[in-house]
Length: 70
Image 1 (cartoon, rainbow, N blue to C red):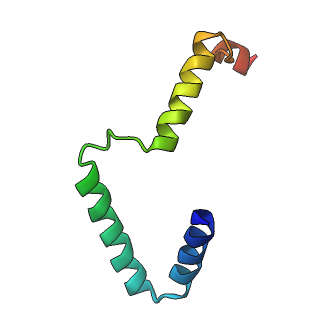
Image 2: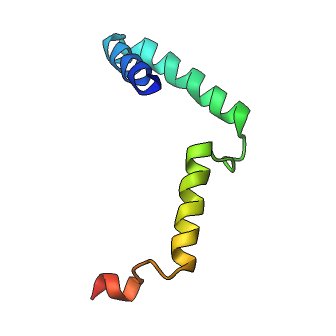
């Protein structure tokens, strides 16, 4: 449901004139900065992903840079 609403919002933004899109973007930027002025917070989904990646790395489930470029 939320994904559908997000898609609807994005589609509606596409029909706005450029100056209105700039206003929406400015408002979103203000909201983000008010929520996290130092850009250090993560969402619940981001936290989940970071914890999963950390766990995988601790278990040795990663590709080293050397292996990547070989």
